[in-house]
Length: 220
Image (tube, rainbow, N blue to C red; front, side, top):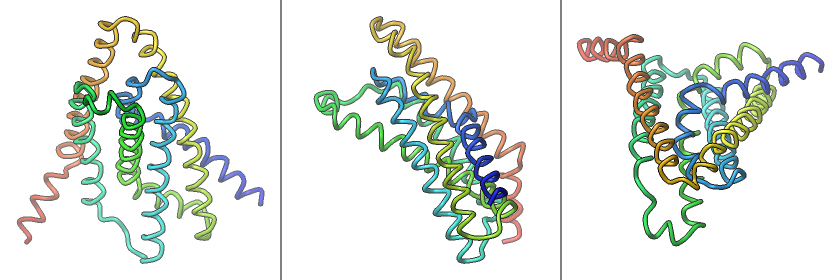
């Protein structure tokens, strides 16, 4: 019992740490500042964590039940999707909410929450292969594995919840000064685009996704 509790505690701490990885915080930063409420911004982090955890659990369950593994090129392709998403989020942050969304705050909130959920799902998919290998190396049963991923997920939810509250602080105070708010939004957007380009470079060139795909094409 003590061993599994220690593993779950480690999973919780690692979950908090995982939530604060650069690609995660950059992606969520592009939408967290759009709310003028700390709690609404915090719940964006909660939705990100829910999407991330649900995807990890779903992929792990499928791989465990089917005894399959995720091919390396698929894993790298999922990571590539993260880079593309970061670029998209960077450009989309420049767009102003539609008139319909502005006139309906519930609709606008729903759009942001669903967007955060989707971002979390993409990140979860990209990290699913590594999480599966890590979990299988630490626990002995399917139930323990699910508990570990669930505890890890609670850590990611808490970590992202706290981060989105913190990142919303400068946006909250800059909301009284339109120019300052535009500068912060623009900075978050540019960082997201630049990091997305860098991320794609790492996956396609440095890690060799394009090389792998070209070799497969030649063999085919």
